[in-house]
Length: 132
Image (cartoon, rainbow, N blue to C red; front, side):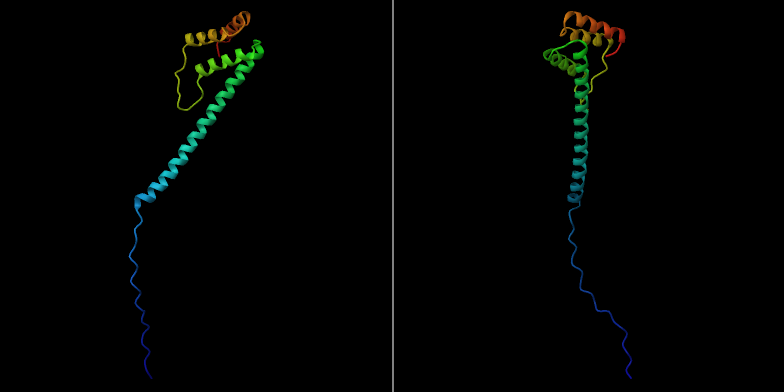
């Protein structure tokens, strides 16, 4: 009887040479996607902030319209004053906190767009309240 030869493994074919993918190309793509997502989130937050500020100022002007009997032209002019004073709410427009004199001047500027009696009442109301 013949002895069985130990099982010999067939030699494997030589591995194909590795094709290296450019390291920077993969990282650049991933970083670009992440940076794009971050920029998209910042854009969305900024858009939301501007929208909320505009809505809040619009609500304030609407209250002034009812309380001080303003017409559409007066309300539109006061809204522009409010936007200029308080800003548009953008994350990229940081205004310093106004001084007390600047707040008083702001109230006087708004009062000039009202009827004289209503303007005086507006200034007096804000002087008593001490707020805007």
